[in-house]
Length: 560
Image 1 (cartoon, helix red, strand yellow):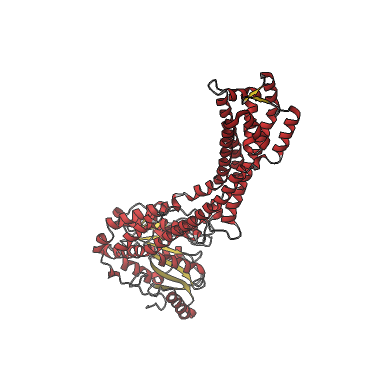
Image 2 (tube, rainbow, N blue to C red):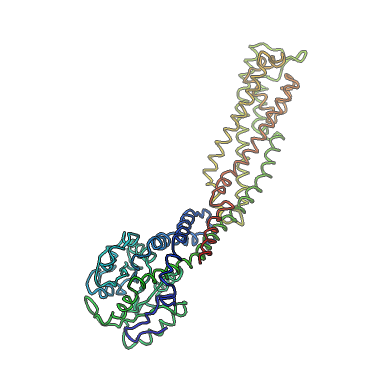
């Protein structure tokens, strides 16, 4: 790289190391025309639609990259591809107190952008363009946020933009500065002899390099006695960052002053801007930056699509683990109900109480038909009412406990000693899971109880067998339903009484209700995994979630 002695520079090419003629402007329409615009527009749509719902490693960085890519497409590529004839936007950017606005005003020869000792000094972006370019200025991201003026001091074919400080204390200023950098065709980055080693300049330059933008650099306020040393160190840093083709301007320290810098101090920068001006040369700058930006897109899109596929892979692992965790618990819950687990404990105690006090199990059966008066049947029905409630409650507790076991197995598989990536994003909150489980258990038991009521109603029908109608008469509809449910739940005494008064019909009814309750226990376990599977059914986690991005990537590479 050739460098200036004091206020001179290598102005042969912006940032990429290529000469201005590397891309002939006449090729711009062919190379960056409708086809590229369509691809970029479709890419923008697909990237904007990307979601990364799982908080796996790298997801935050990928989401930040995705947002930046959308911004780059919105603020620079798409507006530029729509209109290649508008002036090349040269943004003057840098950190607080670097002298950006003073340099900007000095290049124009007039105070048009606020500069002073207050920080942040640049409160409003200013875009200046030559009056002769008025008919080709296109409204876009820059014109919407900046104060737009026309000024004879701006070379025709360029727009000179003074941006807020990149490290402004005001977040809105920092956001605006970042937006304007994304929208620019060329970055003229201003730093000082005392601050060029800070992290900020190199972070900004890395961003420019990442998106293929053209860059030039102004080293401001350089003491003459240390100029050679500082310039040499900066050149080495540029080389280390792979930016040895970056035009470099050195502005000597002129000491305390107010107002504009002497024209001779900024003359090298002004000459360079003039060299870039004009329809052909400014078009070359635009085309070069567009080509650089487009060339940077494949790596960018690859990173986002890789992140999407990592999400899909994580979702597959989570789904497999969730689906494997449920069956053993589900089968155990079903088997426990079939084994009579519901009837143990409180239901056994309740049966002893109702049979001891009401002697409901003392019935007479002749010829397979139970003998009882309606009055005695109503008395038995009243005695059996607590048994019905206890059976329902015991079944509800059992089903809820089955759900808890399913939830615990699921959580252990996904978020146990070795948590799976993304598990916390698909597992429901404990409070929500518990509330849903209790409501589901109540509903399941209510439906089971209604199934018993339907059986009893069929037994009481005029068309039913005499033995069936006699059993209903002997215990009442509610009492017989209580016996059926208690027997199906596993109470052997209740089951024997049902078989005594209903024979084979009773056995069939008990088996039906027992199987029904067992399936409801299995359902309770399976429902614990439903919120997880629903979360994993997100289209963003589908197997083909990255297909659109991969297609855009293939189109981009075909255009390179």
